[in-house]
Amino acid sequence: MAPRNVAANASGLLSTELASGPDIPYYRLKSRISVRWWVVLTGCVGWPDELAARYRDLGYWRSETLGDLLHEWAELYGDAIALVAGPKRWSYRQLDEWADRLASGLHRRGIRSRDRLLVQLPNLAEFLPLCFALFRIGAIPVLALPPHRESEILHLAGLAEVVAYVLPDRHAGFDHRDLARRARSQIPSIREVFVIGDPAEFTAFADLDDDPVRFPTPDPADVALLLPSGRTTNLPKLIPRTHDDYAYNFRASAVVCGLNPASRYLVALPIAHQFTLACPGALGTLHAGGTVVMAPSPSPDDTFPLIESERITITALVPPLAHLWMDMAELVDADLSSLSLLQVGGAKLEREAACRVRAVLRCGLQQAFGMSEGLVNLTRLEDPDDVINDTQGRPISDADEIRIVDAADHDVAEGQTGELLTRGPYTVRGYYRQKEYNDCVFTDNGYYRTGDLVRQLPGGHLVVEGRVKDVINRGGEKVPVVEVENHLLHYPSVDEAAVIGLPDTLMGERTCACVVFRGDAATLPELIAFLRKRGVAAFKLPDRLELFDSFPRTELGRIRRERLADEVAHRIRGRPQQFADGA
Ligand code: J2J
Image (cartoon, rainbow, N blue to C red; front, side, top):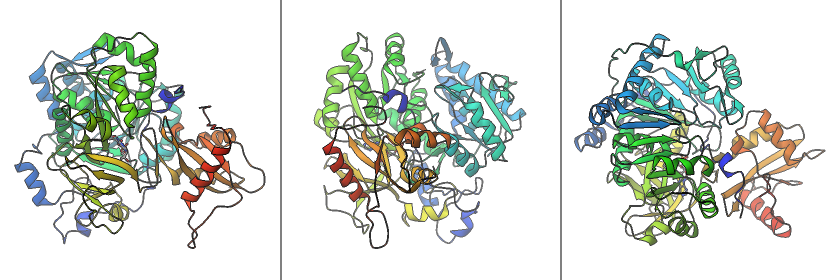
């Protein structure tokens, strides 16, 4: 099979539901129960005091801030190379100084503690010092992904009331400054736009440089960053991650992956994604004293030469990219011998592909099943082959609590499939500014409802069997169906729209827009052009269009999506598969 267009598309990964409710000081609403609400960043939910104390006593949380951690690493690892991007390299000390100078420069431009900044950067060196500079000030990066467009950007910027937007001039053929113009005209809180490259009328990122000053250390229990979630069916919600919890997330992941100063991690997927940033990702590698190497894209054209020249030892991919790498490795003569571990996650890696990884790429495989909300499951380096091939790993922390429940929230019998609920020292207790939604997605005793259907093997490993949430997992990129449907409904002749997932050998799932038109039907290219114009990210565009006269509905009027999927499957059996990208 020819895996076309995968590298171009598999560079996002996330999404979710429209902002609701004002900035409510939750600690007032819930103060009767023993929950700590951060007074500092309003709209966030903390861990109960007793639990927070326990996590501290047991050493999961070390009361460190992410900004100070880089100082520590600079002390420990000094002149060792921390970061490589293109021909440039930075030692730990240089990275530390860069972050300090940037923090001063940002502060001079008015960035203060608890300010939120929308950071939308591809795999550029600047990403890391920028995040550390913000961590030091106590300002909070909101990490958008490079493929996000107007739809997500305006939503995230408005939801977090960001004061600034940091972006590249152009990336992947797209001029991000146009996006900045629209964001600045529509989001009144945006005061500054910092551009890496040609700034046009905005401020050049390169000018953010000033003599270092020390900032008051933020509270380690406070929010360090906000990540968009792929959990919900509409526009992204934001996940608050604290210094304490995030540090533990990448520390524990680095231990499971056996990272050490000789580790050389290739950032192939977008660095802004939780998998690439902290599982163990770039931050886990820095924690271990290793080297982080930026790849401009995950395509073999960019990554294979880097693996060879930089002697990469570990990297992370989503399944469609793992397929692409294997296909290419069989075709070209690339020296990938330094690679000792390939992590594959974001979507399920089928057994056949898992077996092929080791045979073709001649490296170890680790299956990863994580979520930006927290919980990370990894297979262990020492697990038997069958466990690595057939499971999506087990929790990285002995403090991770999981339950597998039926529709009535009762624990299923051992080995049975049910929805995975989880809580622990690095799993959030609530989305940012989402009081009502939080009441649905978190149980009264703080478990996060993942929406994933899993079963657990006696050794603790989980097998992902499906999902209950209405999100399509398109090769690791999460397509929120309601958001896309709402955009489709704006097309003049669309009467009704339902987006469903179709099974696909390469991507796991692809998207199909089922549409009832009034009057003239549009073609798929016409709908795609329309969605693009509305600022919908490329990975959310439908792969296929199917026309209906009307939708099957329940007595309550809800669309029967499973019937639609059956009908489309029936139609496909009658004619060859034809997706928008020609696959
Ligand atoms: C099946 N589904 C999977 C897998 C994720 C670390 C950190 C974040 C993510 C991530 C990640 C899956 N098999 N192996 O993968 O390793 C689906 C689940 C999950 C959702 C989270 C990692 N790995 N998923 O993917 O926030 O449905 O984080 O709830 O983007 O991806 O998506 P996201």
